[in-house]
Image (cartoon, rainbow over the protein chains, first blue to last red):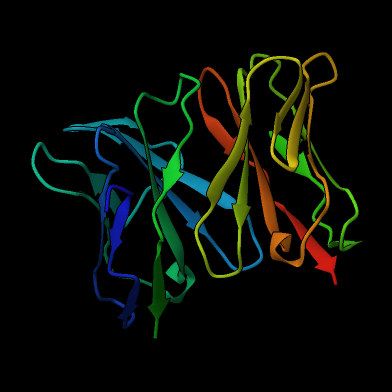
Length: 116
Length: 109
């Protein structure tokens, strides 16, 4: 499967626990984006990464959220000390070139995070 | 003002009719424009993109771009029940990539 791969598809955590969401970009893509979608709402940009670099994190909450895209392995979105308001669908997208080009982003199937 | 605005709908059209979805954007420097379809509980799927003023056709879909009016639209001809979904407009500029909140389309058999 050459598409954007996200796992897990569903993740349940209790308040105060940590959530780790993984994303492997489409083959040949080196630009990764994370979005959050609340029910009945649009996609909200969180962060844009390239290998080993955070390019734009203007949409990330200042606390508890972090993201990385290491030289080897998938991109990780990490949420520490989760709260009920973190319950949402988290989508990862990738593109061949960056934000500032005309290339479209292709999305993974998302991770549905539920906080008990 | 939001960067990208869409009517949330819902928009209902009978099967076989033309569905017209509209989107306006605020950044005059925007360069790329995309339409995504999202079925309930699924991920957004790219269906069209357009970079230049005018029309671009792909099968039953036509994207229309008017940069002077900062307006982009999607027409779906011969609408089918399987077209029922939320359609997201996305606009790429120099600094970021913005999504609208989407228009919900229902095609009635």
